Structure formats: C-alpha cells, structure tokens
Amino acid sequence: MKTNPDANENHRRIPDADLRRKIEVRAYHIWLENGGGHGDHERHWSQAERELMEATERGRKPQSDARSRKKTAKAH
Image 1 (cartoon, rainbow, N blue to C red):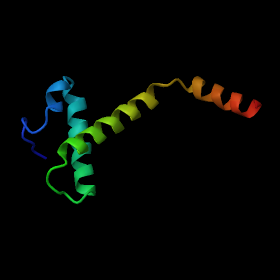
Image 2: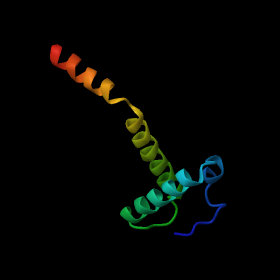
Image 3: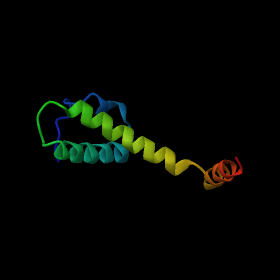
C-alpha cells in the first residue's frame, strides 16, 4: 500500500516508524472492509490508531491485576 505523505497529518505525529507502518496497514484493511471508497482516510487512520493503542494497553496490564479482579468479582 502506497500513501501520499501529505494525505494524512497523523503520519507526522508518530515518530515510531514501526508503529506508523502497523497503523497504515490496519487503516488499509479498514478501508477495504468498508468498500474502498474515497474520502474516509482520516476516520480509517483514527480507528486503526485507536485499535492498536487499545491492544497495546491490554498487553501491558499485568496478569496478576486481571486475576485479582476476577477474585474480587467472585467474592461479591
């Protein structure tokens, strides 16, 4: 997938090239899932960015935290 660097301001705000590439790929797949129409690149980029950031945050949570929440929920 080749994109115009001026097409999206978000490209300039993400200094991590690997993360930017992952967002580009996910945004491309979102674009395909939505029929490949013209004009929604900002929404696709934002959705891809949000999904990847949420996935990263879930991956950073310690498992002991998840286990303690389950124990607390069962205790009630």
